[in-house]
Length: 176
Image 1 (spheres, helix red, strand yellow):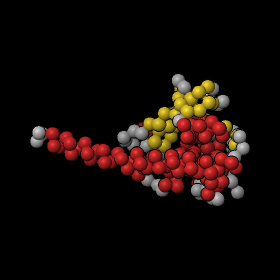
Image 2 (tube, rainbow, N blue to C red):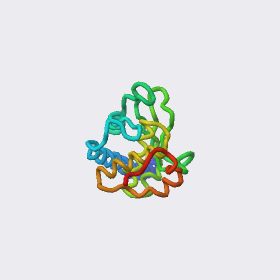
Image 3 (cartoon, helix red, strand yellow):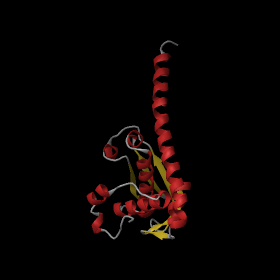
Image 4 (cartoon, one colour):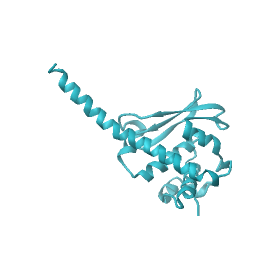
């Protein structure tokens, strides 16, 4: 029995570290859904090339009918335990293209450790554009900023990100 005590203590420690992270991810998704639902009436059926109904279904139900990828697509949420690979550079990212009827969205440990709730909400809104409409960073940020503006009357400042991705050269624009 005494040999099991360190194992039990380690298990409790690991579970207590995972729970706040899971809560931060769930809160970010809930916040993104709430923002999108508020903004939904101000969005056309398609914005910046994003099928808004598919986006809503992906965000709220984890599956959607995709004109972009073709057919029914499931969103697979992956939460790795370590900041290795792409998680060493990103808080979240999406494996593209869709494969075998699914798109994998990876939420890295730093997603929960760094930033603010507003930044986490923006990240979810942004990454879900990739899930539905592909890899274009400028499209994803323009759409996410539009949702935030409609939901909150303002959007998270992203000018540095916008410039770093040469979005001024893209057909997409941030809200005025």
